Every structure is written in structure tokens, then in C-alpha cells.
Image 1: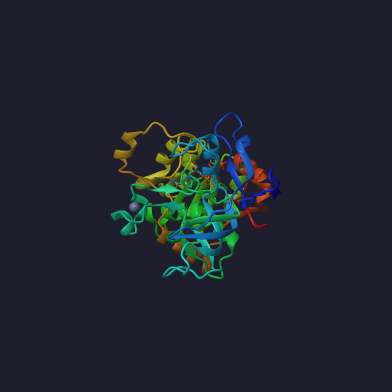
Image 2: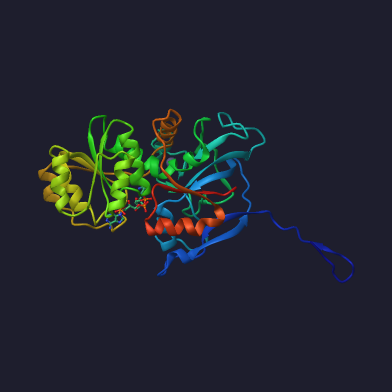
Length: 367
Ligand SMILES: NC(=O)c1ccc[n+]([C@@H]2O[C@H](COP(=O)([O-])OP(=O)(O)OC[C@H]3O[C@@H](n4cnc5c(N)ncnc54)[C@H](OP(=O)(O)O)[C@@H]3O)[C@@H](O)[C@H]2O)c1
Ligand SMILES: [Zn+2]
């Protein structure tokens, strides 16, 4: 654009390149979905140690709703691009050469969403979730994944085998990784054991059902909704129950004295149920508190029945690679509710907030 100026000298205004992104323009309020906007943001540029990715598919998580509500692990003030999950193609590295061991340009990759310092003892030992500077994509100061292009550290790439497409891969980094760690690391479940998960068609819950059933576990689910209970069974649950107190006896009977583990992301609304249906000596794994974080703890029940309460968050990069491997070998097919272009983000968020989705909501920023 040329703008003439007195004296005949022209100032040349070169517009900065931009990309489309879905972001929270503000936080909180009675209708958090109104905080959502699709905006042009500066095209990101990879610096040293970083990689630029063309995002082919990105999925939504309940975490994005928490952000719109203004709930986060760090203060939210400026507009923030949403999204923890992305899969796409490597466009450029911050260095002129491809870094040692990194995927070549043009490779399909999935992005590990956990941000760490990469230097501390925890990071060096592969236990990066205990890094004192741990953060998550879409939490300040990190970018979100619901954008046409994304810059992340090279260390956050996991290369995709040809058998795993971008839509499936975009489901993995939060819901499926969280489900994997809860089931196989924190609860330590083995084939033949019994597990109950609350919720049937939510992101984490559906991931748990699909993953547990596909790996030799007997899985039970709960849901407040009859249609969702049917879906849980279609996904591979042996049976699905209401969350009423009356269902406790039915679960204990169906699991021959109680399940080996309960996976609870609901919190206050289901905590009592969880403590009652787990077998003596069993484990309750907690990785969320959608309905509230402060149920009565019932310490007497915990010590008398010798229960283990285990917190769980996301998973390691190595565990994400194992989840990708499960997909590549056909032992895991992520449940996708729908795939929409980025421009239809508002519809996808309405489905997330309304809870009427069956599986992961995926956006295709390039679509
Ligand atoms: N720590 C981590 O690393 C991590 C990772 C992922 C998610 N999370 C957390 O886990 C939770 C679930 O995430 P998501 O993405 O799976 O969410 P989502 O797709 O929105 O699912 C929410 C689930 O919670 C159930 N639910 C909600 N309120 C309930 C209530 N009052 N009583 C019973 N069930 C209720 C719903 O089941 P029905 O409608 O079928 O009853 C649904 O399955 C969120 O709080 C999220 O922040 C944590
Ligand atoms: Zn660290």
C-alpha cells in the first residue's frame, strides 16, 4: 500500500502476514461462549530450537471452556489462542538445517501439548510432568493450537506413521494421552482387570472406554443420559449405569465385589459413587473436577478400605508416542464426533459446552 506524502516522498506500509486463529477475546461472564472470536493473528516465526507447523487438524477439550470462563493455571488477561491439540505438517525450523533427529520438512507430526524447561533433572529423566516450570499449550505465555500455523519447541514433535491420519492424531495429545496415563500408568491396570469411568461420550471418558476395551480390560461407564449410556456400550463398555446411589449396588454386583479402579474427572458429583464402587485395595484416579473440586473426602472410607487415590495429569512425551503407536497398529481408533473448518469453531464450541457430542470435536484450520 502506497500513501503519498507532502514533498513527494511515499511511505510504504507492508501489512504483516497473518493467520486465522480461534481465541478467547476476554474471560468469564455469564455466557463464556460469547468470549470466543475468530481473529487474524501475526503469522508465527520459528526461532532457534523451534519448529513452524501448518496445522491440519486440531481438537477441542473441556480445557478450552475453562479458559473462556477465565479459569486457568496462570492469570488470563490478554486475548489467548485456544487449543491444546494439533497435528500437521512441518513447514520450517528456526535453524537453516533440520535439527538432529527431527522430522524432515513436510513430515506429518502430532504436537505434545505439555511445555517444560527441558533442562531440569525431571525433564532430563523423561519425567517432564514434574518439571517445576510445566505449562500447557494455550496457557500464557504459550500459543494455542486452534490456528492455521503454530510454533512449538522441536522437542514437542512426535512424528506420525503413515497409518495415522491428522484427524485421528489431533485427538490424541490431551484426551487420549490423559486416558492412557490414568489407565495404564497411574492405575497400573492389566488385561482382565475391571475399571469404571464416569461420563460416556465426553473427550476423556470416551477415550478411556475405547482404549480400555481395546486392551483387554472390562470397562463400565456412568452417564446422566440414557442415550449416552447406550453409546458407551456401543463403544465397548460392558454396561453403563446412571450416577444415582441406586447404581452403586449394580456396579459392585456386575464387577464381582467392586472394580479395580475408578477413573474420575467429574469430582464433587461422582466422588461418593467412586469411593463406593472401587474394591477394597483398589485405586481411584482423579484427573479433573468438572462438577467441583471439594467433595467430602471420606477419609474413613479411604483408610478402612485401603484405597489408593492417585492424581493424574496429561502424560509424558514418551507415553504420547506409545498412544500414536497404538493407533498405527490398529489397536486404537479415536472416536471423532465431527470435523469442521476453523470458521465453524462457534458451532463446535456450542457442542462442547452443551455436552451433546459423541467423541472428539475436530477443526481443520486449513479446510
Ligand atoms: N488433568 C488433565 O491432564 C486433564 C486432561 C483432560 C481433561 N481434564 C479435565 O477432565 C474433565 C473432562 O474433560 P473432557 O475434555 O473429557 O470434558 P467433556 O468432554 O466436556 O466431558 C465432561 C464429562 O463429564 C461428565 N459430567 C459433567 N458434569 C457432570 C456431573 N455433574 N455429573 C456427572 N457427570 C458429569 C459428562 O458425562 P455425562 O454427560 O455423560 O453424564 C462428560 O462425560 C475436565 O474437567 C477437564 O478439565 C484434565
Ligand atoms: Zn524441566
